[in-house]
Figure 1 (cartoon, rainbow, N blue to C red):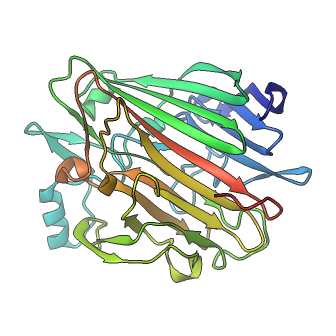
Figure 2 (figure 1 turned 90 degrees about the vertical axis):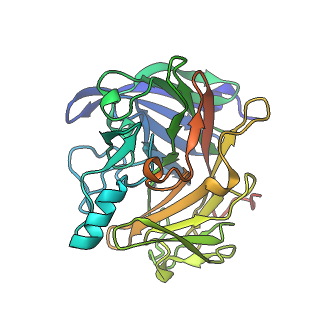
Length: 353
């Protein structure tokens, strides 16, 4: 087991375009894994490093880059997607888009007879979170950040809530545990979906090409979308149980289901290089789950030209606040806990399970 000396936690100053911030750096020196978290920038993992020999290599896309947007318009690194994953459009907007041939904008949903705006992938990824705790304990380096509802958030989402995330590094893995608490005075169940848009540079540490890198996952149902990224309700079988090369186009908005609670993982590999396994799961309370197995998904998105790949773990579907499909319904006073975990294997490591 790692000792306290094998893991480190340090807080440093960081500059964001909107002002000063802090970065909390977590390191597992024995396993050669480290990450950086910026509370003021959505409390996301903003840096993810792997030690190769004596050199540390950054493998997160756009790590610590906040000043300029990415060429494709995606400016994230590994943000929390909440209270929605993906786009949000009313049936009226979708019908108009199909009639006019234009993407439906802005993103909106109806709740209780009222129309609300909703940002792409939700709004908490762009907010400043509070730094609650950090340090080392039991062979882990950790940081805890929190965020609560406010009058400004009720413009998008008319509920009282509290979010906390605990990022920790140790035993060769990086884990992000999110806890969602619903306000005790909410009028009814609080609906949401949840996910993470983690993006890796590809290839990560080797000289392989993007096309030769692969993804493997137990998911075997590919859900289909129309030209406006609206779910059609149809799916087809797609066997990804063996490594699928990126050259097949699997990076192009592939949305997979067919998982169980024990098999909700995806694995990225580069020839002769690093293997990363991303897994997701809900932690039940008193044996009770708020999510359903059929709502466990991975959304694959990337760009060969820009050299990145996002294996996004989701619970729920796009546009769930309008379709009501794949929603988590958290009762007043309820708590929901979801975790994303990343494990790393280098060419000289023993095979992992």
